[in-house]
Length: 171
Ligand code: OFO
Image (cartoon, rainbow, N blue to C red; front, side, top):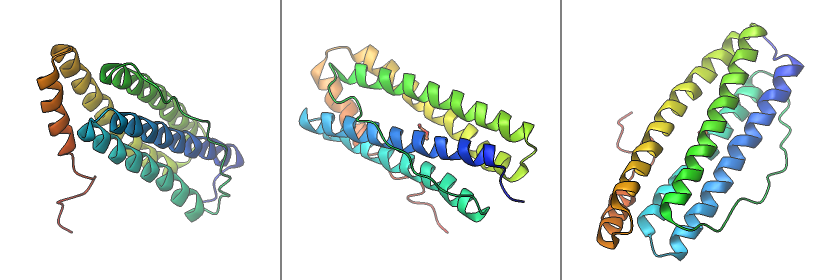
């Protein structure tokens, strides 16, 4: 079943949003690295990778269904921040906006009776629940820690232990 033009355009918009997320998280990784928080930087680099994977998941879906991938411009991301907490508050705001976009896209897929796209988007809906929960947890810890240097370094070490999605899984 070919994808309807309205959906092709909406999927392309979402591909842009995922690459935009990736770019934003890479800028955050650079900020953390410049501020000697290598663990936070590692966490953000993995986030950049995950967002790129999200974009590619939609790209692959569109290609498989005979749709045209039309890559769009990516804006320069925010690059200066005042604290780790401010970075993660921006991540939360960004992810909530992405969740909203995914929900709207899903509603459109339902309206257009596009079942394959609905199935792909169900994966995204679950992923957003997980991303929001993880980011919320980090924000809670950063609030608890405040300006306590040793605790920030401890969290930095913990975030530095994050593994790439699928790492450690057996085939
Ligand atoms: Fe693609 O999940 Fe975040 O933005």
